[in-house]
Image 1 (cartoon, rainbow, N blue to C red):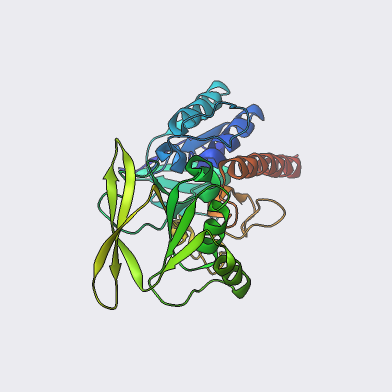
Image 2 (image 1 turned 90 degrees about the horizontal axis):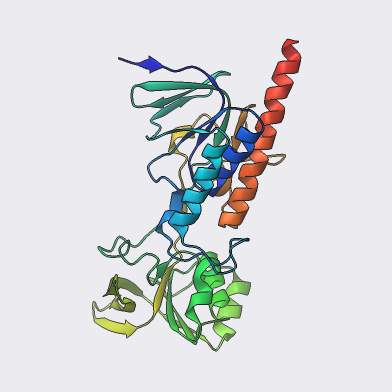
Length: 316
């Protein structure tokens, strides 16, 4: 039997940095927010062991601790939480309707902070080694690899940007690409080829990541696609740069998206439907940082609050 719950001023989908920051601001603005955790409570940061670039933590902080502290702060101001995954939305409101299995939650404003999922290689142990030598973010983790040997997987703009950034720290960066030509823009290709710290393995894929949870990554096994031969390459870290997939399937046909599936926002975090706002990686394919996600979560909550005020003034 379907249960319809009492309406909230604001519902926030997702509990990463964007969602929890939105919750903190919405709760402090008396917007009575409800956060629906989603499939990965705390977002991608819960799989990150060390965060050194989030302001306010001079000694760094591990991801799960940071996200728990943000959740505790949101609860302190009165945010309610629901554990579950949204299966359907109706944006023909307000009120907007959000389904979590057979429960329906109503809201006057909606903040979408469902994030994006990194595209991985599909290897058996890549998630076991995530944060222990496997990364999808050079800006986040490059600092930990001073004078180390690294592998970057990919051949597009992101891969070469990551490789170039990593040469600020690493002794050597090897770009592994499945073709013999790069997809990146010519200026990025030129810069990478001229960088003495960047090398290339063409027509190759990473068929295995070598290492374990205790010791971390110690190397990769490369398979040459033309002759099938395999070889091991020693390295201290593997950066996977083959793109991200925004978690926006729920909103197909309901909200404007770009060609990559990211939600299109204007004037800050406004989507194509009034009263619906998007924050964090679900609408940001460029920066994808915890601090930028948190900042956009703040913006979304403040814009949702102004939207609610406008509706209230229209009624009076």
